[in-house]
Length: 113
Image (cartoon, rainbow, N blue to C red):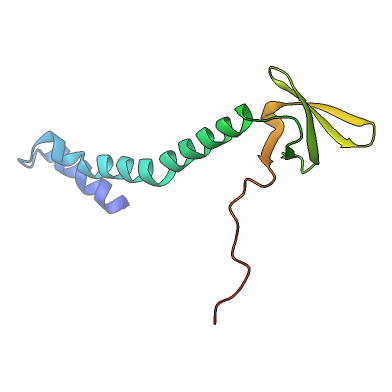
């Protein structure tokens, strides 16, 4: 990859007769590959998380980013009141909720022979 970049830089410096866009083609390809491998999946995850946080309702079981499993008692604007047990409640920000239990895709635990 480094050799491609060096060749592109040498070709641009020497004016090898190629168009200016051809010398930047490797850089453009790298950016496009990074976009499809890194940025698009991250945006998809962010949209799914935002949708999950917007649809939180009382009695949903959730897991916080700290690993606490609790039941949603109330949902305010940006605050969620979680019930941890009998008469134990905790307020957290919505951004501290990692996932809802029961929303994860089911994994096939059986092995096929």
